[in-house]
Length: 332
Image 1 (cartoon, rainbow, N blue to C red):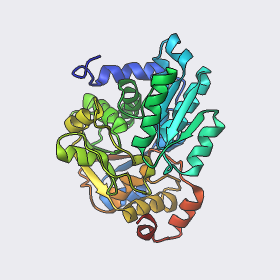
Image 2: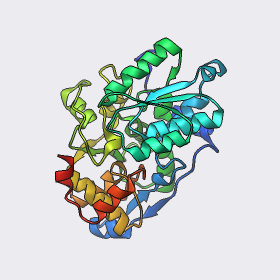
Image 3: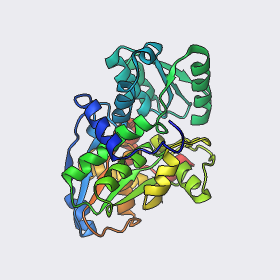
Image 4: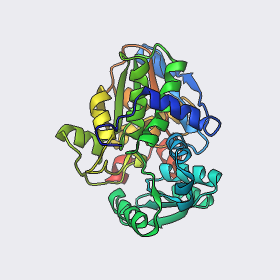
């Protein structure tokens, strides 16, 4: 497939849904009364953190592995990850009985490492950034012949994540806007392709953290750029998009209506609200939609859907956040 042809469309997402049927959960969507009262419009929460591995990543990983040939499966798979993609890939690989190697930086929280270890994957800790971990992935591909399934910049990954957008439009067909966590763009690109494919007028807004938002910096620059990877409550949104990005940068540039950045305190407010008002435990990346709404950074003009993308947060950190720890000092 050439670079020009690498755009995921609605037909690819529908094919992915058929491929992963029975391997992932169709997650529920609920009306948030508290956020609806605040916004003056219906605000719905897509509870994707109820997914089997605790995050949306299982959709893309399951689709990508299902699309491999028998020969490719025999070689095993490898990926760099900030945690959730690695867990999803390890889970999907275990179901297929194939080897999985997950490369991560030292910034990945220990609770996410433990979850991947329990699934039997081979973990490699390399450097202090996603880019450092990717160097080990490249070495394993070259020297051991493993098949690389990256966390976002891959058509089968994007198509798998896009199945989330199909579900949203079936559950809230009159949605005026969808707020989606934004990192490397796999989720945002897939959801936007599905949503826009079904309802072109529905806005799709990417939400990220102010500390090291690589896709936002790249969109502003008009090309993929590197950013410093910094500690953040939204650790799943960390890492670069790759200077040789072939897919998600172009899709996010073409499909997203806006990108909003949040401070660490705004992310923490989202986590607290999810727990105190919605009775949901979500990680920082999963709380950014709530955080954006609470901070007044998104204008709500009609039914709005917030994607709660993951729940894999260290529970001691979660306790400190909901008890009001000063997050700005912690992340500095």
